[in-house]
Amino acid sequence: MRAYFLAGVILISLVGATQIASANSSLAYEGRRLFVSYCQLCHGPDGRGDGPLAKSMKITPIDLTKSIRARSDTILKKIISGRGRQTITGRDRHNLISDAMPEWKDVFSDTQIDALISYLRFLGSSKHKLLGDPEIGRQLYRQYCQVCHGEEGEGDGIMTTLMEIEPMDHTNPNETNSLSNDILIKSIIEGRGRYMPAWEGILTQSEVEALVSYIRLLSH
Ligand code: HEC
Ligand code: HEC
Figure 1 (cartoon, rainbow, N blue to C red):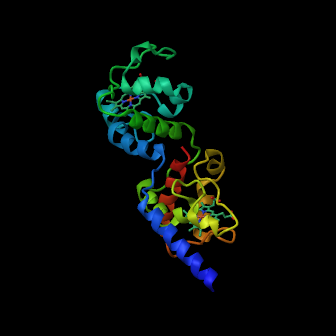
Figure 2: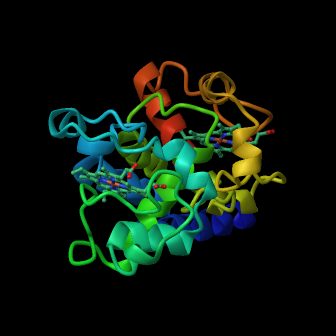
Figure 3: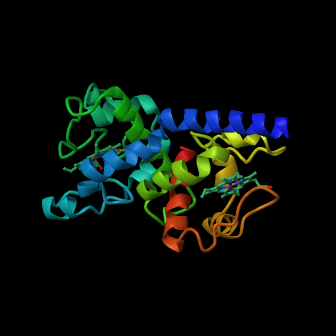
């Protein structure tokens, strides 16, 4: 009895502690927010170059989901910030980045540029679509999932001290990429193993899809 009581006290104090600590989320998640405000007008919501402004300016930004694979982070930093952009070679068309691509050096901090690069890497490598709204997913994840899956999705939430099993690391792209959106949705709705609860009737389909999108961004 006493042992249960003590365990309860420890648990409550641990839960209290995580509520105070604020969760940092993945860079790609932050990058997506910036991309939506600053880049998609030209590059299109999925980076494919079909944004509304590009059409009216009669420019054709390259398909970022393809072009960025061959670009190192250093080069991407130069391209996005504009610092040292003129020295970039290796482009097929003119070896130059078109002037229509604004220079962002006075707009973003280095961390924000890193976040944008993470999101571009996500666009260039994820096999899976973002089905739902990851903003909503982040709030739900913090509220209902981080106790087990961890603040950053690494599978090290405080409840894992009570379970004998650690959930998979949602920040590991090899692990989450191997699971389709349908499989993730099914695990969330129906539950998995002994400890992963079933959320059917608790979360709506669109909330589950929002969570799946957030999990996708966690791995980048
Ligand atoms: C006003 C339109 C516009 C906006 C806004 C814009 N871009 Fe561009 N971007 C372009 C154009 C045009 C190119 C050049 C395409 C080309 O030369 O093929 C380009 C090129 C790029 C490239 C280089 C692609 C490559 O590999 O050659 C990257 C990376 C890029 N943009 C990222 C961004 C990011 C990140 C943002 C938001 C912070 C952004 N762009 C906002 C128009 C824009
Ligand atoms: C009580 C602890 C607990 C909570 C709360 C919890 N999970 Fe899990 N979850 C687990 C465990 C443990 C597993 C691994 C199950 C297995 O494979 O046996 C898991 C597995 C999963 C899986 C399957 C893929 C994987 O990571 O193994 C997904 C997706 C998932 N959880 C998402 C969520 C989401 C989204 C929430 C919040 C709505 C959530 N979980 C809440 C414990 C939890």
